[in-house]
Length: 175
Image 1 (cartoon, rainbow, N blue to C red):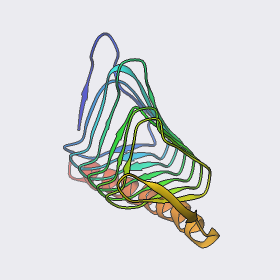
Image 2 (image 1 turned 30 degrees about the horizontal axis):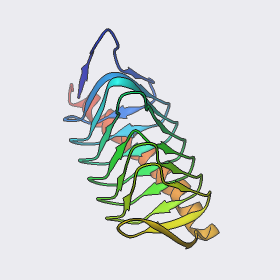
Image 3 (image 1 turned 135 degrees about the vertical axis):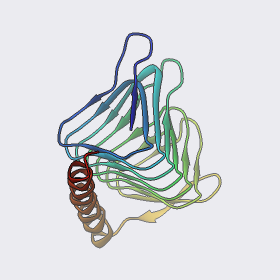
């Protein structure tokens, strides 16, 4: 794990969060309790802040970055899938951003929504809470079922446990 100060701002990581080896956090990054940032993910806040809420997980190889004047807000119990990109966007609580999906500047993903794998959410796009969002460019094609919403929260809880397990294994190995 690398925590890199930039322009007088340093990442702040809640003691209950997990940051995997190889993950990089740069600048004005704020990681909430129970959140996790996994292997080779990059969270780079060199101009504006990035907020990652409690119990959210940024999976392997994902990138979270900002543009001038547009911070990133990721809510609680959010999963940002492997190799996904979130760039200067707002992601509500309980959202799943699928693998390789891209969410661009000033986009707003409402709480409980799902962005399918490989989707491209264009700049300034706004999606209502609970939307099922797919395609290039991304469009809402329906509503996320309650069963899927419950799975997202359960998945986040599993990532909290997994982060604690990895942290304990690192402590035991002297890491």
